[in-house]
Image (tube, rainbow, N blue to C red; front, side, top):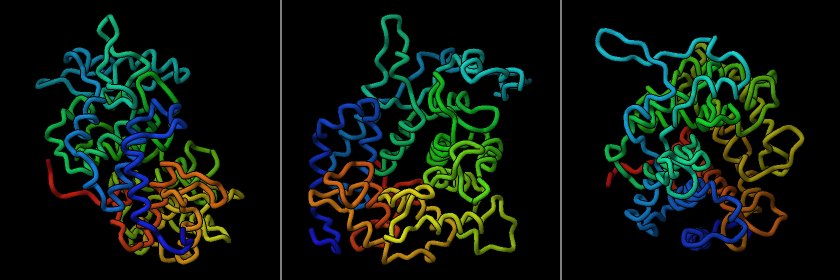
Length: 381
């Protein structure tokens, strides 16, 4: 493949094959079926090739992954309510409720199920006792991927029962504003704050999270060097920085081209953030995710998207970046993590297309950068 030419048709053919059957190397990703589908569908969308997809079949498949509450009692289980004169009102847990370890907090406050989308086999499969298997539960990342796929193909969310998603999602928000991805408990960090914000944004309903509390958590994750870490006090990282900035943008705390609006106070240290992001571009033209790491295809999107949202993308060396990205283009179609490896993968393929879209490569659709997906269709099913 010509190292300076983007071969769109070869990439479309590569994705069509993966749409039908994945290589055996993906067997270990059984729990991430919706995420893999998100990469394929989003890639085809960037390439303006969604006509290769059987939309009705895809929608039916995605919808089969949603977990449904059996009744209202199941939906309310694990939530704390107070009674007003008119109706029950959801309130935050008290600080005392959250004393102890994360596992202790989950056992004392979150016996309720999260009714989103699972990542593996159809999530409405029940155990013999009629309960959803704890090994096949809803996950914030899978829910984000499911809704993104539906959005990309123009499926109307009026056909989705969104109230259980939003009501039960509040169980996943920690008192410090972060989110865990499942009701069973897991790590709490910026990835899942972004997922929660993206879910609420796509559903146009913010009752699923406390935005102010989430904002405070994000602000605590900005490091001394300007970047953001997944959790407060850790090392700045390109992916975490995207999650922070995109979530703030989705929640309305950061404006488009915020750096140019110097008359307004910044919620975060914007100049230092831009400096850190620009310093992630390496001598080979690509972007690294952390200091002293090699350039990697995916960070051309993660860090490039941050600069795009802040109105500073024009400061990076776009010509050098394009050369790096095309050096990661596989002869089989798709993109590789690094130039010197042989085979492409779905993750780096999508973010390779997304990064080239930021560069306005001919034949690629623009992105809705803050959501991490191609520009949305205006038509509905």
